[in-house]
Length: 59
Image (cartoon, rainbow, N blue to C red):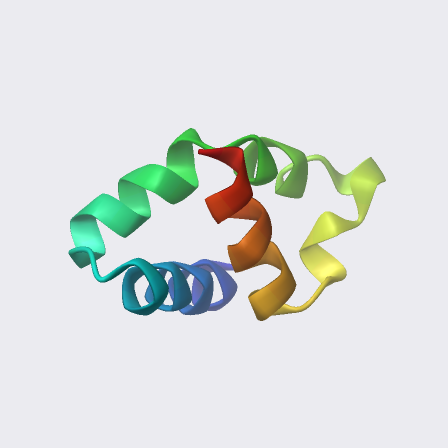
């Protein structure tokens, strides 16, 4: 899952033109992150691009 988080954060950083630290903070504060950690949602099985877009919508 760590590699997936890294890929998502990288997409957020590039899309928004922010630092990796800001993108990581945005990811960890997002509702999407909370839902990804809940195995019953199966959200972690979705694509990186979809999840990055969801994180950016959460802000």
